Length: 126
Image (cartoon, rainbow, N blue to C red; front, side, top):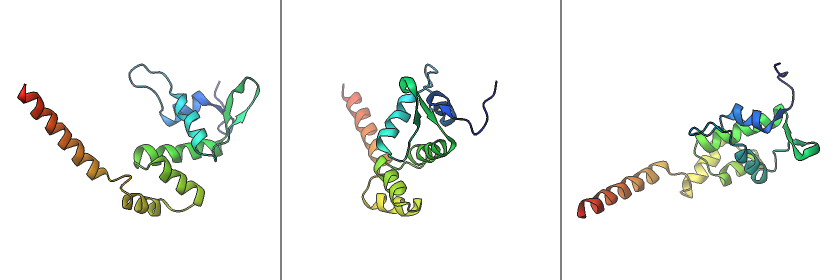
């Protein structure tokens, strides 16, 4: 039985849509969605008896946008909140975050490389 495209989806179904699956054991990571609900006031699932969450297409699209901005684009929670609350373009948030060094990917990569090299040197001293 396939659900209608516009039907409400459970939190597990939404997690699968977003690809929030633990790669090591195959479990669905619904806790991520519950955390995002706390962080982003725009996410408002229907909560029926038994405290089960049901998401409509509007909420699912919003979760997809949040997932993309956090996971693919590397924005911080704070940056995504700014984008959603002020309804400003992604480019403006990205510029302001880079100014604050919140998502300077090259800088982080360089620091990780330096740490890795230091660890290798420490191992060679033993």
